[in-house]
Length: 241
Image (cartoon, rainbow, N blue to C red; front, side, top):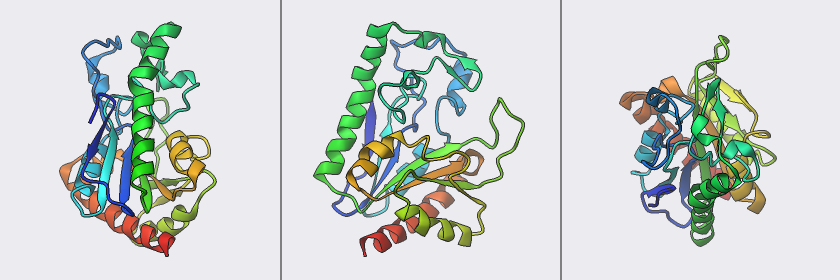
């Protein structure tokens, strides 16, 4: 565990690693974002529910969870390093005045959070190869900037490598779920962490986005942790076979 990331459970060779870039709403005491603290419990600051789901999954043999340890408003790990959105100055209509940094301030955020997070994840995957990486996020039933509801229970995202997606989608549908294939947004656009740590090295991965109201309670988190562990294990077996 570090300021930028935390590891739950013990990774095993040929196991499953649940990676959640946006698992935390934590803002270090020496950083002032200049926003209403209530926003830190909303989706612009954290992927609601994923920390608990990852923790529950990591209680199962062969599964560990690697989670971001600061709010995405402090540093968004699921972005390319050169993009300004790594330290967002606005999110879903809310200004983040504390992130209006000069070059030195921006570079300091990268050095303190972004690079340690990705260096640690890369080292883990190199030292203990996994059968499958499960990239776990959550999405809102609707954006604050739009009244249009999002009907999907879960989205499956990928860029070029869709091996795991093609196996997982029918399994999720068999559970009676409304599944978004590259919805509510496309993994060809929002896939930075998996592009870097999975696609670049041919590591199998499954990008999952769960609608946050389904994992906002302990009951929902327990149900989805069981479902995703079952499906991830089956995907890992089929890909390895």
